[in-house]
Image (tube, one colour):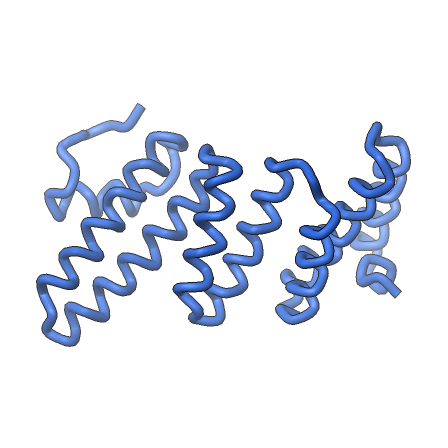
Amino acid sequence: MPRTQRNDNFIDKSFTVMADMILKFLPANKKAKEAFAYYRDGMAAQADGEYAEALENYNEALKLEEDPYDRSYILYNIGLIHASNGEHDTALDYYHQALDLNPRMPQALNNIAVIFHYLGEREKEAGNDDEADAYYDKAADYWKRAIRLAPNNYIEAQNWLKTTGRSQMDVYF
């Protein structure tokens, strides 16, 4: 039984019924609708912390989904799961795949920056200042790109860029 049919609270059931109705009337082929159903089940499992189940659903959605824009969000969500599990290299790979399909995805750029910043912090704690600076510079590059796409977001990143001297811009929009 699909996850979306197992929800037991009123709001989840109502959303599921509405989503199913919309899905029936969307001008999409059967394959695209099935991909969306897997994606929706993946998001529900991910929200519940059921990462293995979410990954199964996302992988099924990837097999079916042909639209590059929609595929980018599936890949992005897979990256989120790997990042939350501490699998940084795998997460970076999925974020980059998402960006290859959808370069205007500031959340993927931000998450890449967060990983590089974290790696920089680890290197700094280990006393490897040069390696830390290299990671911080990479984080800065990705945050600048994210901020250009979404200037009202990532305020902490904007402050970090200014306080570390990695950005001379006061405003990004």
